[in-house]
Length: 275
Image (cartoon, rainbow, N blue to C red; front, side):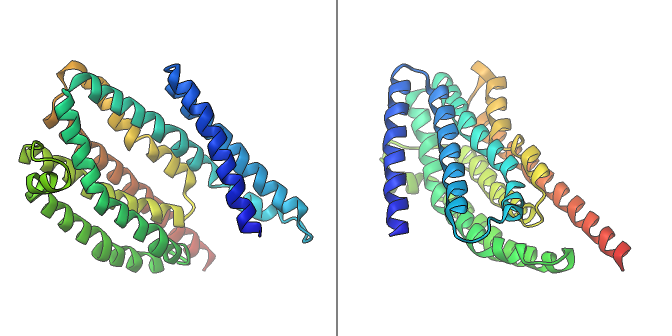
């Protein structure tokens, strides 16, 4: 019954929030709509969590709440920056490219989502709990290598195959009129492959509770890509978008690799001092 009440409450909240967003979007105040939705969702989740803890017959464990609170910073940064950056990207692409080119770009991204979404799900549901249980860097390193070989490499191979067959795939999934230049497909899908690698490193940072570094790194992912499109302006082309997509996630993966190496080195130094 508790689960049913939670589902009904969530459905009611989403219905009310959807009505508010539709009203604001109708007034072309889309950014306010997104910010309002995230603020309301965050308040509702936090309120429900506190209420559940306070009404429980058990002693309230505020220490546990503080432990979970360390993840609030990256959650807030990601929850606000990602949707706003996505709106900026869509606006820049829509204003600078033709309708046909916009359709080609989004079609390729939707096709690659079949691969990247699966990789993200496996990393978060299978590998993150195992990395979080690692006591130190010595235990984490083998898990990273296994995840690299079992998730990142197969994803990269699948994306390479999609790039090779991109025209045929877009014809099957969408329409025969979709014909994207191979070099554009290669750039974007190479960026997706690097993006999956960046996610692996990101989940490893979550496992080590490096939340400040996660929050900083978030500005080097989709927000950086949005900033690059703003910088391109009227000179934007499909090729430049693909190049910026690949460059953005190469920078993001590089930062995550640096951050993880720093965290693991710090952890090793602390353990050596203890022993």
